[in-house]
Image (cartoon, rainbow, N blue to C red):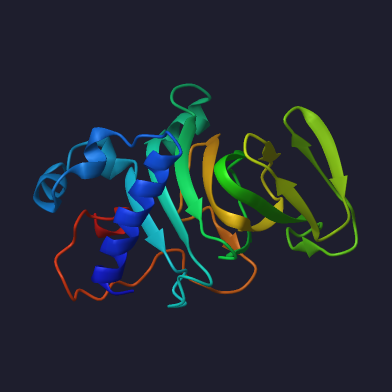
Length: 221
């Protein structure tokens, strides 16, 4: 992705987030110089901040996601069983923009439609080896109630609705009827090691530096 395209996406995403009544934390608007200098902060060590990905495919409008990690714990706390064991993100899925099929080994997550269009989530249960079970039904909790779908069933979340995805559940998602603001509340998040994709794709975008960055991405630091 070109840095100029990333800059445009940041500005458009921030405007959409604000239109839904959500405000990003102050460090979202730090200059690149200030962010580079914050090397001893949780922002760097825990991967907080802007995250724009095209999954390495170079087709952001077709396959991509806007993310901002607002808080994140430490995987070492999970082993201890105490401490900051949670994370939170705000995301934007553009209309008909695919976030491809994947699962997590450790992370459980609540996916919440915070506003805008409908969020469509395609779901599969894992098989005995962790692969995709294309035969069995899959059951997920939606706002406290179990919902069972056939393999590959598509769950539609309206604004205000949510689903809980436990580790191992395969999922892909996109927005319909407009762009969708998505909240994610989860176990500690590790995007470097805890994303297992159906197909071999990249988690982070490769940036072509055609202009100066408006703000740094998590992958920049």
